[in-house]
Amino acid sequence: MRRGFKSQAEKLALKHRANFGLGPHERLDPKAFLKSNGILVWEPSDVPGIDSAHLHQLTVVDPDSWSGVTIRIEEKTLIIVNSTHPDGRQANTLMHEWSHLELKHKPNRADRSDGGLLLLSDYPREMEEEADWLAGCMLLPRDGLLHHCGAGMDAQRVANHYGVSRQLASWRIGKTGVNRQLGARQY
Image 1 (cartoon, rainbow, N blue to C red):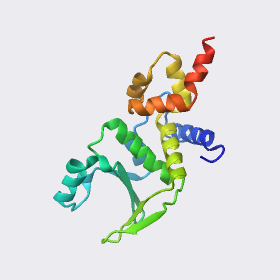
Image 2 (tube, one colour; image 1 turned 90 degrees about the horizontal axis):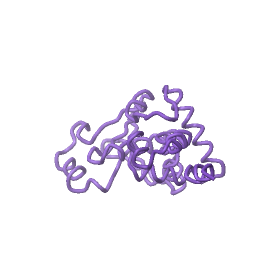
Image 3 (tube, rainbow, N blue to C red; image 1 turned 180 degrees about the horizontal axis):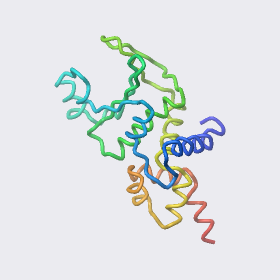
Image 4 (cartoon, one colour; image 1 turned 45 degrees about the vertical axis):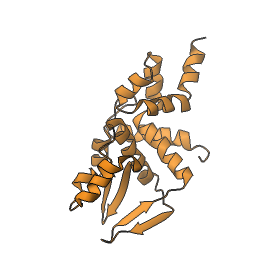
């Protein structure tokens, strides 16, 4: 990641959360946040006219091959999230997709569907890492992690509190240095 991005992302996340009426200790509802920003959230079954065979492929045969996709139709932005994934993973997917939008990332490749929709894919690795980091900041702000972990919450309790996966909570706790900072306080 580019120099200074992590601290910039933490500040940006706190600003967006505050504008939404949340402090760093509170759970963010990604769907409500996106709606407040004019972004629609759909599940695959919400797509008008989706062929039942395609829906079956996406949600039954191969649901692990995708998490979410962002589509722009005229002036509307739409995120389709994989509804077969657990809620915590969906939360991360939604904020990851929002992060690409917020950071104005441009994909390596863009395709047009038969219906003329612009389909974006293949972001460079650095952009994926930035989107991962900003999504994590939005869902699990460092200040909130420091507070909750300092109060004795483990990664699972933090995950439950913020509505994310234990894996994401553990990753954020480790990558933000919260464990090291709290460990140093104990001595």
